[in-house]
Amino acid sequence: MDAATLTYDTLRFAEFEDFPETSEPVWILGRKYSIFTEKDEILSDVASRLWFTYRKNFPAIGGTGPTSDTGWGCMLRCGQMIFAQALVCRHLGRDWRWTQRKRQPDSYFSVLNAFIDRKDSYYSIHQIAQMGVGEGKSIGQWYGPNTVAQVLKKLAVFDTWSSLAVHIAMDNTVVMEEISKWRRVSMDKKVEIMGNTDTSLPESPREPRRVLSVAPCRAGAPWGLRAKPDARWPRSPIPAVIPREESPGSLEAVTWYLTSCFVSWL
Image (cartoon, rainbow, N blue to C red):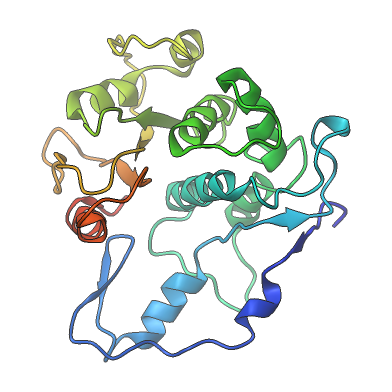
């Protein structure tokens, strides 16, 4: 593949430590496991997640820009991984598992192609970096979590295959009614309002779309998101946490949020 690039971190994983034995449950993206009886299931779940990290030797961004994202692409890669997980759930389902020496579904390769390091991929480092210019970020400049969320929100408009609405929860607050409106707004209307700060969106008679709700929030802040879907939410959104700064109890807050609020996308 002419778009293949190299990662700096491949050799770091030649050896790895086994899971520590603990009576506490292991949570992975909303799924609960026991380290004593479900170790193989844990490994399979982790191995099925897409991992993006610093790369080098990709085509120059913008034709004359960087050919590596070392030192500035960490948040962009984090955004890619969050979005890739959303697309895997969207097209393959949360229960899908990558299996060695087995042909994967075509949808799996379509998701991968959306993140290849080249300018014509929907969510490539090239697209994110160039779209970030509109957010006041120069190519090669480090992004904060809100910036990468805003950029991915704009790029998602062009991905008609996934038809994924991106909702960004600001001020540490997730407003369920706001997400509900995003689920019903049409693709054409979304293009019109892209970049508009007004959140009063008209409802559309079209089939509700899947929503990725991203909260670029302060870790440790209070949360307010219903954990279980009710009759108004036949398809629940995927909440994603991007801690903006550490504070006392931040790890506990993020752990609680993920275990209590991350619902399986059915």
